[in-house]
Length: 213
Image 1 (spheres, rainbow, N blue to C red):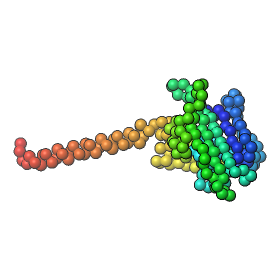
Image 2: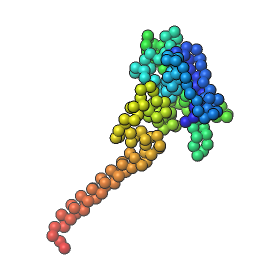
Image 3: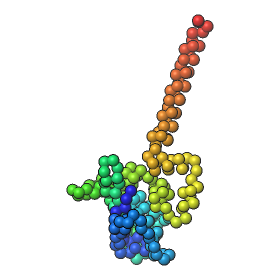
Image 4: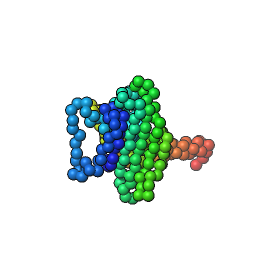
């Protein structure tokens, strides 16, 4: 996934609309986000996560307290590019929220859009459908995304300490190896059950024959 453009307004310290053009930032292949504590560095990562999954990893219940105290609305839009054997495709995820309490917000708009030379194609416009589109296109659930792509402060140790099933399933999703992991295990399990059933049928038939030679 290649970031293209991020727009955010009303999120934490970003009261007015801000635009981050990642294409210009990525011209040299590497860029950094610098600033004093509280300047909004992590909020940019929060904005990307909020756009993609409708939640902020470090917020209570995913959205509590994320809106700027002086605003009653919040909006994020994240454009990114995916490259496959078929070529590069661009998508934009848009979400808007309104204030419903001192700390609580409610989602009002969610859209997953394919950006084409001929215009925008809205592929999903409901909260759950948009999140599902994101997961299907980038192949990562929110837990994977915040462990491997946008790693929040203090979460690096958690990433390193993953064990057993959690690590295996995450790596499967990261490298699209499900067919060699859970799907293969399921296939083997079915084959074992089929063979056991066939064996029981043969044993029953043998018992029915008695001592016949």
